[in-house]
Structures are given as C-alpha cells and as structure tokens.
Image (cartoon, rainbow, N blue to C red):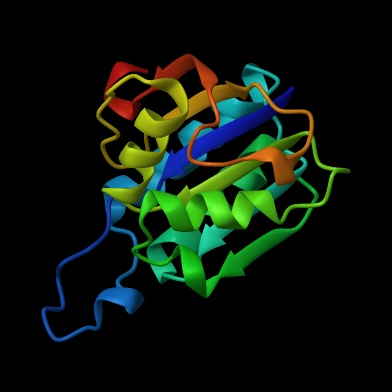
Length: 162
C-alpha cells in the first residue's frame, strides 16, 4: 500500500491583473490556510516522505508553508509538468517515484487534482483552495500506478471545516 496526499494550493492573489498566472502569490487567507493544513498533517500523523509540487508560485508557497508547520524536513520537489496539469500528468509523475517513498504529497491545481481524486477513489469530491485529501492506494509500487489504479479515499479536509 502507498499513501497519497492530494493538496490543492491555498488561495492566491488576483491583486495584480498584469501578473502572469504562474507568478501569482498567495493572498492573506492563503498564507493563513497553508500553515493550518500543515498543522493538520502533523496532528493526523500524515507527514509525507516526499512533496511534489507545481512550479507555480502559489503552489510552491503552499507546499513550503505547510511543510514548515508539519515539521517536514524532506525534499520539496517543484515540477514543471504539474503546473495546470491534467490528472494523467499527476499519474505519470507518481509512476516515476522511487519505491523508498511510502507517502507522497502532491501540491497542485484544479481541475487536475479533483479529477485525479475521482480517478483514484471513484468519488467526486470538491477540492477548494487549501483542501487536503488522504488516499490509500492499492499498489505496492509507484510504478504500478495507471488510469485503472484504485484507492480508498480516507478523508478530505477543507480549511473552512477546521
């Protein structure tokens, strides 16, 4: 069994309409919610072995703030292929992960993350900004992940519910 944490980036700022989408920072609420979700990760004892995130500024900031609050000391690996990625891109990235990692956290964007969650769990769950889903995957190896991989959705946490 492998564990996957699916974490949508926290709320971003639209204050500068001329700013490229990739460079949008977190807004005040986002800077508050990301650490709150990191605290939840620590409290639920869900600390990942590896964090993979989109290269978008808002996703990297979300990953960094949450990781710090969770007490995470490992690698945060930004990947270009996770920026605005479809579910299939997330699956391809997961399939290439080293077997030494048992729990991986993905930090990225919708609609790709919601679609990924639906593909893996068979359940449709909204993932608003800073939402975190915990999925247990029925695979022994990350390389076994395909479009047909099934998993069990353990829980979804949304900042407004905390």
